[in-house]
Amino acid sequence: MSRAALPEVPSRHPLGAMLPALYAADGFTQRFTAGLDAVLSAILSTLDNLSAYLDPALAPEDFVAWLASWVAAETDPGWPLERRREVVRRAVALHRNRGTARGLVERLELSLGVRAEVLDGPGARWSAVPDTELPGGAGQPVVVRVRPGRSGPVDRERVEALVASVCPVHVTCVVEVLP
Image (cartoon, rainbow, N blue to C red; front, top):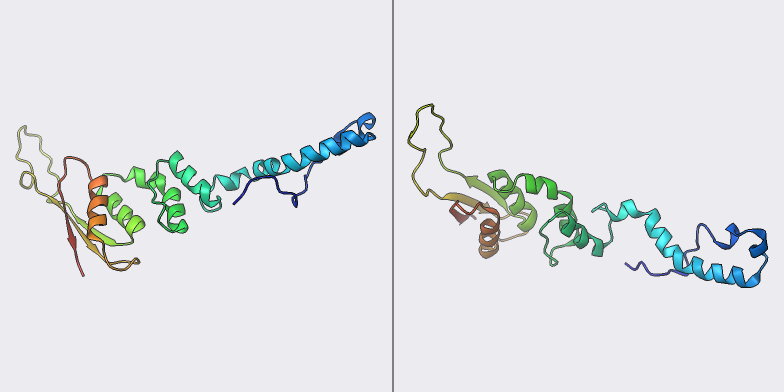
C-alpha cells in the first residue's frame, strides 16, 4: 500500500479556500496552494485515519511488522498476513503467559498451528518445615506432546526451536510428536 501523494484524492480542506480575500483573488496563490493541497492530501488522509494504522486488524501490511516491533511480538515474514495480525493482536497475552505451560501451548498453536499438551511434573509442595524434600526428581524434564493441527504435518525441528526459545532456561523440555 502506498501512502504517497494521490492525485485522485482531493484535499478535504483546500488551503486556497481558507485564504483571506486579498490572496484568494490571486491566481498564483491559488495555484500554489493547489499544489500544496496535492502534496498534503495524502498526509492529512493518513492522519485522519491514524487509528486504523494502529489497529493490527486494519493496518496496512507493512505496518503490521512495525506494530509487531512496538509490542515485541515475534513474527515470521513467511507467515500469512492474518497469522501475523493475530500474533500482534495477542502480544500482551502471549507476554503475560510466557514461561508457563499455557503460554507454550498458545504460542505453539498460534505460531505453528499444532495442538500441544504440556506434562509439567508432579507440581508444587508447601511446608512450614525448613529443608522439606522437593516434589519429583531433580532435573525432571517437561514433556511437550504435539499433534498435527490446522497446518498439516508437524515439523519437529521448528517445534523444538520454538519450545527452546519460549521455555525458561532452567527447565529441560522434551518434545514428543504424536500422530
